[in-house]
Picture 1 (cartoon, rainbow, N blue to C red):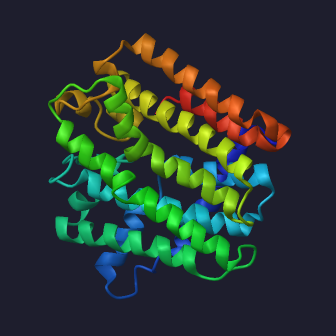
Picture 2 (cartoon, rainbow, N blue to C red):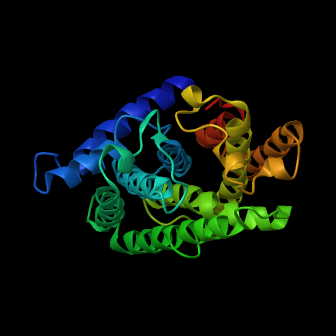
Length: 296
């Protein structure tokens, strides 16, 4: 088995190719909108959610072409959310993945429409008939992604985040926000990858949900730590923005050392959840460890 670094590089290259093929060509009208969509999606990002989809697919033996389509769908939802998150009416950021944000590079209206169009394209990809995934599984996957992206998932978490700016949340309130804002799409990535070859049994789904819960929270803990400790050039986005805007973060409740220890504890829970997969779950375990060891 190739090491994790080589596997992740190969997967990032595969996703760049797949996403480039899935997106409308920039030469097709409306050209400015299509250019903005491609700008926001291609040429950057860790592709953590696609990695999770492929790792979960590997754990259950799902066919890779079907996993790839699911991974593209969840990454398009993620990209749309970043465009909207960076808008002046939200977090008002000028830098994303080391380059100007979509509304800075184009304009606010084009960025808004690009996000909307990526959201629609994600569901179009997931709904289309394709080998390896039957109609019942596709319907379940569509409902899963819709819930993860909506008011009971990512959008709901963002609403809580905006409402909490300048306030102090306790740990339960903070984790409610992040389970929705970040964790819902991470869980969707895992379950979509596992469902790409057919719906997994109840025990498998429960294990993957427990894994995703721990990984999703650990990812956000480390995001908060890196936002405080890492420079803008390394992060590829504006460092220190959370503190400057009075955002509720894990570092408002605990020290950096305590936050790192908590992230490690969450990852250990995730590793325990997928231990019964044995060697088939190796990549899920690798990603969990990567989340607490990453530097950007």
